Length: 321
Image 1 (cartoon, rainbow, N blue to C red):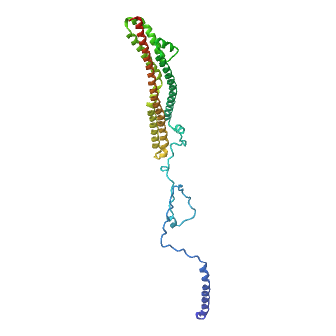
Image 2: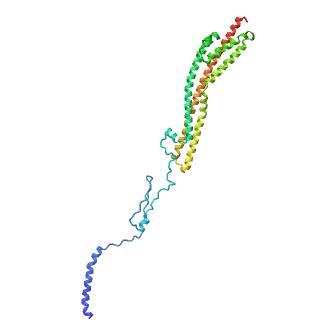
């Protein structure tokens, strides 16, 4: 029975094989190719160089799924700089570095030092103006009185010509005449030495008083010239001390942080030198001018003594002594 059906089975199998042979090429074209497995691990990509132009910000996580190989090759995100190593904020936020701006940003102690030194500068130039006028007027009057004394023939004539004058040289002539008249009754018995000694004492006191009067104000110049640099140095030390305190508080040695405070401190020293140097120069100038003025008073006193000696000699001749 099976033998009878063999031809039928053979025909069915041949048809199936023929159908499969026709269908396989189309299925081969439509089927996707299987992924090739890499035999070696890919090299990780080199991280991009970090520049100083801008800080690297962390990127947003991607929603695209990644393979384990891609996760291993991707570089780790760069974290932002911690606050400890971030650039410290400046301790002096002012942007005006002019002298007035530095004064406003300075500590109150440094401000007090600067104000006192500026006041010292004002005093120095005020004394300069007033003493120049006073010395010029005093020396001109002394020269006129000395000429009058040298041109006079007697003490009484010189005193009369200088009666309307108020300078020390005119006072010398008038004081000598007063002493001569008071001593006149005793000159014949005691001699002229006593009146000369007393007149010399009076003239010396007038000269000393005139010198003390003309020197008023110059002591301030000497004080300012001697102390202003040290006062400015005190302000500088105080300002630099505050700058070092700022370094300790900000925990940074950046020069931009401490430079404004140091500049404010050095400004106090500069103002101290501006106050001291002119004061010393002006004081030395006035010392020379006062010495010349006192020399003129010395010439006037010498002229008065000569007039007194001449009057005493003529009096001796008239009395027949």
